Image 1 (tube, rainbow, N blue to C red):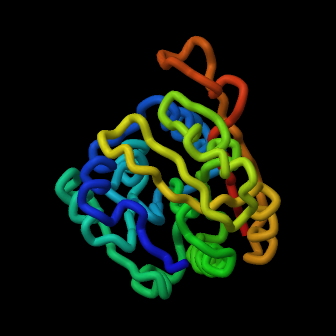
Image 2: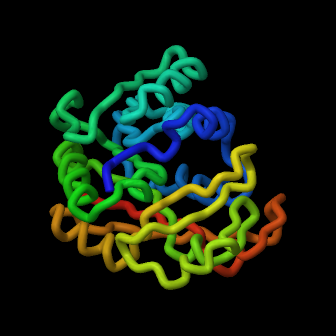
Image 3: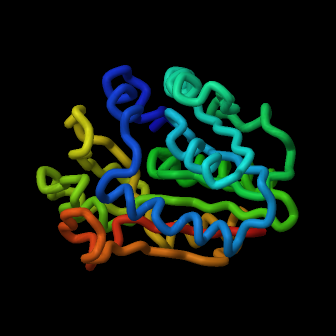
Length: 239
């Protein structure tokens, strides 16, 4: 499989461009401000795989000087339209040579590694990103938990894909977003916690913190499985 952006085609890009933090996505971002306060010292941030800039704008609202990078120029064009003063840079899959060599206090990645197809590519980017951290910088990697592909959710459905139940790390899984007009399935690559731990070790990174956010009954969403099963995993990594 090649490294392509799942949101490259115009219909999907347009749908994703309008998405903010509804439903299940709320849990992915809810705990990040407190996590950043706990672990990040400094304001220079890199948003790796920023897409249409949703997560870059999120970092900027929290006071970070954020640079968003992505392989899709179309998605970056949408990011620039929404954030004219933002900093966005197109990179290619061969590396991050256009970026500064080091100095980021925070490197943030929201769902990007769900779409990088092979362990070799994941390891390549783990190493590239680790090399660009400030001495005390942290890499916060937000990814889909394997369970997201085998349950029903406020913002996703997987019931049409029973084969997901048997998927192993590195294999394709399918999921449909219900908060956007585009109801075509998104194809992701399953990656287990054990596989991420191996990646970290190979890349010279250590897991400083790991969060599996759950919903609460008090939150203003019609949770399905979110209060019992975590759909996301947030890794805080350091060198």
